[in-house]
Image 1 (spheres, rainbow, N blue to C red):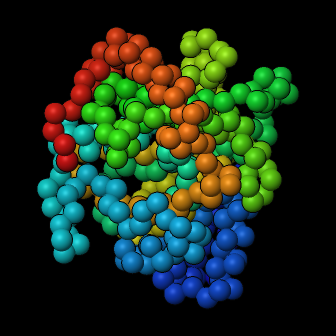
Image 2 (cartoon, rainbow, N blue to C red; image 1 turned 120 degrees about the horizontal axis):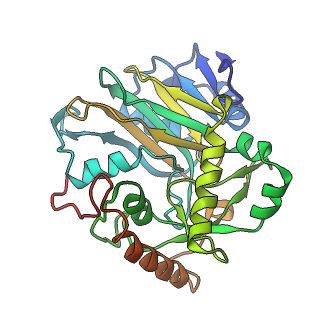
Amino acid sequence: MNITPVEDKVFGATVTDVALGNLSDTEFADIKAAFLDYGFLFFPEQFLSDEENVAFGERFGELEFGGNPMSNQEKLGDRRFGKIFDIDTQRMRSNVGNEAWHTDSTYKPISSKCGMLSAVAVPSTGGETSLGDLRAGYAALDEATRDRIEGLSAYHSTQYSQANDVGDFPSQNPNGIYHGEAYLRPLVKVHPETGVKNLFVGRHAFGIPGLERSESKRLIKSLVEFVVSDPSRVYTHRWRPGDTLFWDNRAILHRAHSYDYAEPRVLIGTRVAGEPESELAYYPSDSEAESGRQALKAELDLLRRETADRRYGGTTATRVA
């Protein structure tokens, strides 16, 4: 097995001469160490089955989900993919929203630990996935900014991010990702395994308690933009069938890129759940949750009047895919 740092980047490595579907314990130990060091790993030409995706993810911990299609096509029962979803279905509205920088599952009580994508079908152009290093971003901040954000937190919600980024207001569902809760998380995170500090911001973050709304929005936006302003802190992956990307969701931003949505783009997603000891904000039944609900409701009321010029015009999808 060869582990080669990505050229001209401060993070990331390519791992070759290994089969993720048939790892020895020694190989896995080396992969885990590299994962913590580099933040993300790229494994070319793996062509993993859904079961192999799940098995590899489970070596890092309990899964949020495994072997799920992250695609613009309907998955059929025999592992084939059928019709391409219309751009105005809620499925595609959510996909388009993910073209903004984010970390996964910060909108849940327990944020995720690892993200994994494996390519099955890719468009002729576009559709890349970019990653950004939140560790290097924090390390590069000036002392005044570090002092300013130390101790600050922001609420996280997908209902906020969909409305703010693309003018989409999905129907609320307590069992889905648009569930009406908002979870408060620090802007500065200490990695539970490495002890390294990193920023913890992205499209789901809003409403920093103690700051005016406009100041909160400017601060979060400026931190994300600062992380991705240096090319050495951003890696963009041009997908080929068989590729697998695996990243540390606790320290790495990611986003999808746009493409011709009439072409197939099929990635298989597996997500490792975070440990409650480090990734739990609070549960909906906890007393802290009510402040998040109220903050989200107030923010959505304002965004409904502010997002008419965005892609979906401040509307709600009527078709669900």
